[in-house]
Image (cartoon, rainbow, N blue to C red; front, side, top):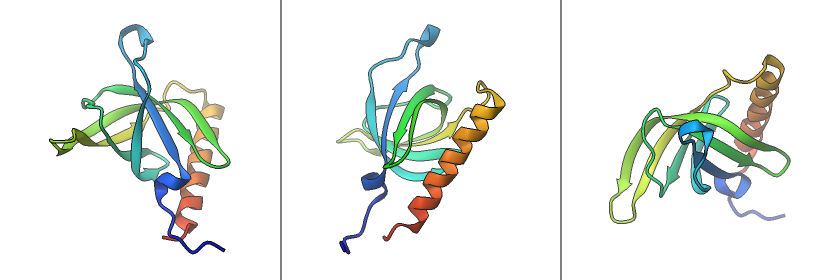
Length: 121
């Protein structure tokens, strides 16, 4: 059995796209996940985002994948000016989903969060 501590980003991968006018998105960017909850994320990214900016997320774990999950940036803080690293708070936007889809996505996020809470640190 491997006793190496596991980080959050060894268990999850995240890519996002800022949503532009008319729903056309820019290219994918990756981010480091600092914290996950069923309502949002805290991430670190090299891409500068703006507060209230809409983004589309792809979140992948070992057993689950959520694609094109709509979210909104709620906070941005510059961490490192030399390397252009930004710490961003992101909340999920479920308002455009039908009720059944909303419940399913929230349940998958809860399952992912619970499994991450059980992993060794």
